[in-house]
Length: 46
Image 1 (cartoon, helix red, strand yellow):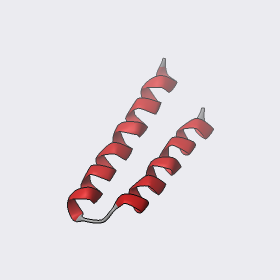
Image 2 (cartoon, helix red, strand yellow):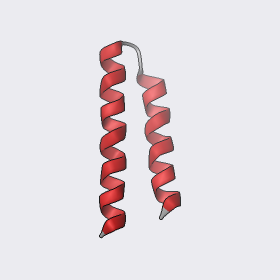
Image 3 (cartoon, one colour):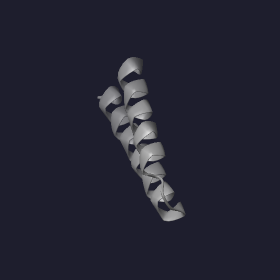
Image 4 (tube, one colour):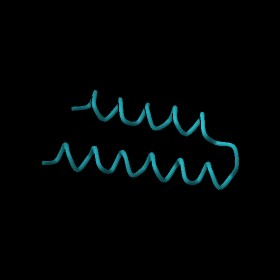
């Protein structure tokens, strides 16, 4: 379960780093990463 969560976080982080061209874009990337972590945590709790 931790491996899945770690994989999601790493993938989101890599996408965030690759797509951060502006401050607004960085904020959107951080928000998307947070949503991915939240979804993974909900899936793990079920």
